[in-house]
Amino acid sequence: MSYLLRLVVPDRPGTLGAVATALGAAGIDIVSVDVLERGQGVAVDDVVVDLPPDRLPDSLITAAQAVPGVQVESLRPFAGALDTHRELELLEALSRTPEGTAVKLLAAELPRVFHSGWAAVLEAQDDGGAEVPAASDAAPTFEGLRLPWLPLEAPRLLPSDDAWLPERWREMAIEMMAVPYGGPRTAVVLGRSGGPAFRRSELLRLVHLTGIAATVAHLPPA
Image: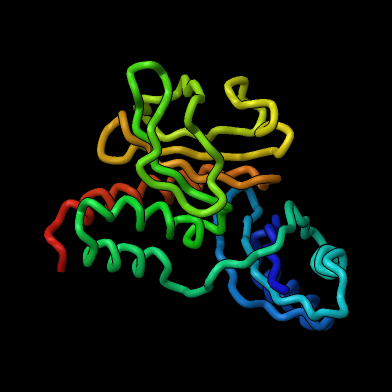
């Protein structure tokens, strides 16, 4: 079974290699590594690993934290398709998709790109709610909710303790981030249940990708 480890590691040469060695010694295969951010002497990495059937998930934490200075920020099952050019493949697919259906493709594929649980595209309504023209599998229902942050003038993180969230969503620790898409009345929202919280580097990456996607989606299909 595959798992996604989010690691906070000392940002010095050899640390990630030491983590790979420790995991390998425990019989755990690394499938992919994404460096999310660096700063103040540490790096944050998302590591997808394959865990043998006879090993417990706790063994991932034990092996990773055996390396001095390494902390496991989160561990969760991972069932997405893996590749090293996720953003480029999505943009290429959007360029071949008619404008009317491009937003559905974007919502369906963004969770794979960002290792998130789901994505939705929301359109602000005059009554403070939102319509949902597109959503991925596992996306929660936004219909009937009041969204005080929509229209969305700037990208923002939406942590799981925000007051507007339904109680059930807070209990599930749903972490979200949202960015404008083609204008403030439309937003792309990504979410995870149970964390980890989205980081600023992920938010900036989503801003960049959706900005390009909005342009590509309005081009004639290639």
